[in-house]
Length: 182
Image (cartoon, rainbow, N blue to C red; front, side, top):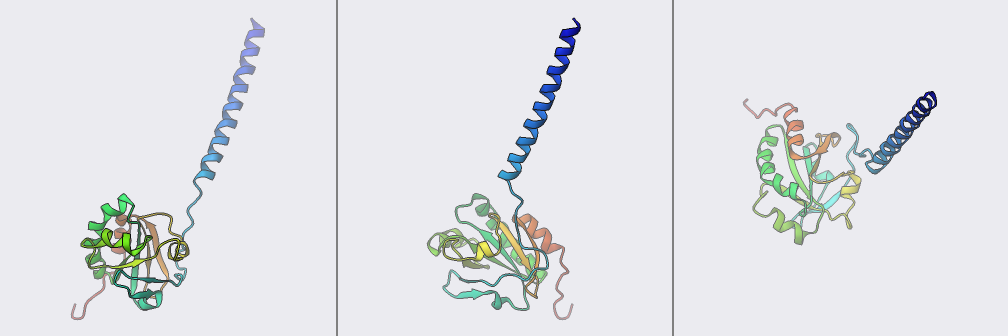
């Protein structure tokens, strides 16, 4: 009887140790499969870029000197991006109250971006920056779509994140811009 009890205890401890090793291995595998997202750092100067608009005009970071801007990175094939488009139109008006201009940045070419944006975000500038031809997405370390990068008037990163609701929160945390006579 005593031998069975000792054997059972040893077997139980072996199982506990194997379970701990299995759990640690699983945790390491999950961590390596989902690395920490790299993003631009708050206060960092925004990387220079150049990209055409849907109207064919080339825009660069220098075109936004002394203006706060929020780049909203989207993909025409992204369902959450499609769902956020109506909210972007509403957010654009609110963002102006805080002195921020919203700019949509598509990771596809004009032929795919135009039908995605036409009639949905006519008040926004839409930049076309296909990932295979333009470094905009990689330079801004875009983790996925829809995501954003909010820059202050000095061209420094104020906030980055994922989704239009988070962008709205970041914009609403800014001081409102007073208009002449207010």
